[in-house]
Length: 496
View 1: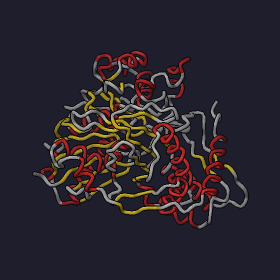
View 2: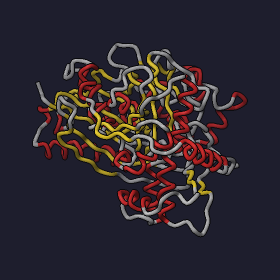
View 3: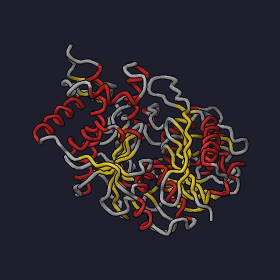
View 4: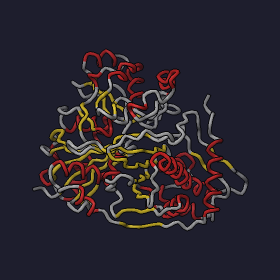
């Protein structure tokens, strides 16, 4: 049997392919960035064809680095930025429009129209989500209403819809597989959480032709075989939206286990088992994963739109740093935030507020403030937002977290991780393999072909790399958090 598994991680800013061995260790990795297209304020797009080109390149690149070929891979798993939306011609494979990225807010008026008198929770009891610009269903409505000829093509059955997983697999299989998994489908506003199928009532309300939607499958299943020359014939057997993939890669298999991923945004998921818990505190109810024919496992999620991308903003828009890695040293050049709080509501506020009228603010500014204070406040914003989500989870679930498992690019920032432990008042734990998003996709794929025997073996692969314990006294912790909450209130009602 082949000794390795490949995982394609198609993220918001880059695409990478990681090859893992049976111990869950990384053998090789190749990563390429892609263009961020910003046509106007609030609009964020990607080139679908560029993403497909990057997909092919990173697969070949990782195999070359490892001196392997496709026959060495037992299978491939896919993980992806979840709500990003693409429509394409099923005959030519050409997109009708750029991919509309999850951060995009152009559908604000569509959200208001759909909410009507019933409000943004109109469909929440079925889909676990509020009506929001965040989710792919409203993006698809915008495309159908604004791209010339698309609605006619969709009604003829010529236009296909998909999130990034669907687009990548359709291309990898030479157009043979038009599929998604339950985790990505649960982020569309269109899937019933109980039946795990598209909801015809909602489709009718949004005027979305069912024919253009992919087939919903478990997260660990055989979807097809690759036709790309480098991996020709390799089965594709795992699909997980990126945050659910990290939950699985962190082996959060028990009810009450949670992880937080620090990437472009920040996403905390809490395993709630086979129970669908409807949040009363601004969290999302989502599918965590479904392995084969087993019942789906659900999760509560707190989604934060801007965390790592705030560091990119300091680099690209303000020029305060030249490389993202410089942010920690700059933040350490001052002893504290100087009394400023940075609320990065660039595209509104996600959990637990869901305020599309909010916009970013830095409060508490004086002439004393320098770029070190800005850097520190930017990092602290991630930790404060995480605490807001954790408190909402505690209220909804009744679970008091003993530790927080963390992953993603920002977990190597020692200052941020220490402040995170301080402001939460619980230990923060980084695993040995921090690329848990890719690892989760590999795990789901591997289980489908018997590469791993089961979840007990996956747990054995997990180990601690670093642990941060709280050092801040409770009075300071609560004072800082109270100031943060006041700062958040200042961002409301900016967009009329």
